[in-house]
Image (cartoon, rainbow, N blue to C red; front, side, top):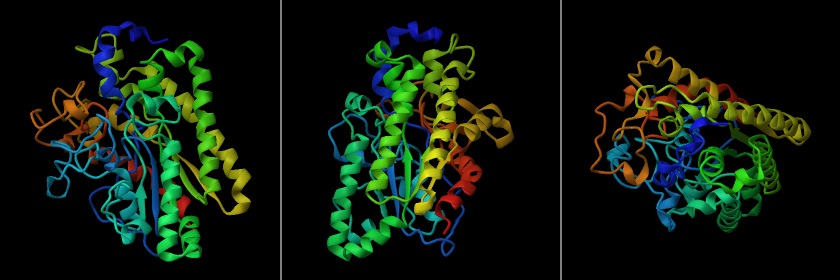
Length: 371
C-alpha cells in the first residue's frame, strides 16, 4: 500500500512524535480583528479533538505530549508557551474572536478558570487523541469519550452558577467544533501493528467514521445543535510524513500521494455522512457541517510562492523534518520568520497557514452559526 512502510528502523524514534499529530484543524484567522458579533446568537464555543485544538489541557495530565515550553508560543502575546502546538494562537482562538465571543479559548482543565471564562466556552481537546479508542491510549492522553465526560461536568458547574434554564439555552446556541482523525491513521494504523492486522485501510476508515457518528450522537444528546466537523488534511504533505514515507526524502520533499489519498477517501465518506445527518436532524433546528481543510492546505503547499511561502515541506523549528513537542525545544534552531513557512514544526501549521485556510472556510462557519 505504502512502499516505505518497511522503514521500521525509524518508527520507534518517530512514534512519540507522531502521537502529537492531529487533524490539521484549519480555522485560524488572520491577525486582523474579525468580529461577527450581532449577526448570530452564538455566545459560547466548545472544542473537542487533538493537538491542533488543545490550548493546554495536556499541561494538566501525566503525558509526555506537551508544548508548554519555548519556542512554542514564540509569536504569542508576551511570547508565552501556553501548551498550544504552534507559534501563536490556535484555530479555536481565532474563530471565537471572529464570532465576537472571546479572544482566547482556554483549556477546560486550567484550575484557575473563573465562571466568566467558563460560560463563554472552553476547549476539551487533548494532543494525541482520536476517534479510535485505541489512539489516545497509546499516548496516555484524554480520549474523546473522556472529553465528553468533562463537558457534562462543565454543564453541572455552569448550571450551579447561572441556573439550569440559562445553561440549556447557552448550550443550544453554542458552536461546537470537532477536530480529530489524523492520529488514528498516521500514528495508530500506519505505525502500530494492531489495527492493520484486523482492518484493511477501507475498513478502518469506515470504523473511524462509525465512531465519528457515535460521538456526534453523544453531542446531540447533551444539547449540541451547531456542530462543525473538520476533515483530514493532506496527510502526505506533513513534513514528518514526507520524512518517513517518501522514497527519497533527502532529495525529494514532495507530498506522499498514497497517504493523502487515504485522507481524500475519508473526507468524501465523512462529508456524505454529515450531509445525511444534517438532513435527518434539520427539522430540529440543527446545523451540522463538514469543514474542509484538505483543499486549502493542498493549495498552499503546492503553490507556496503564490502565498509568499519560502518553505512548504519543512517546519520552522529545528531541521523541520522530525521535530515536534520535546524535540522542538529551547535549544532548537528556529527560523527567523515563521510567516515564510507553511509549518511551524514537522506537524503543525504556522499562524499564517491557519489564517489562509480560515479565509477559505469562513462561509461554512457563518452557515453553522447563522440564525
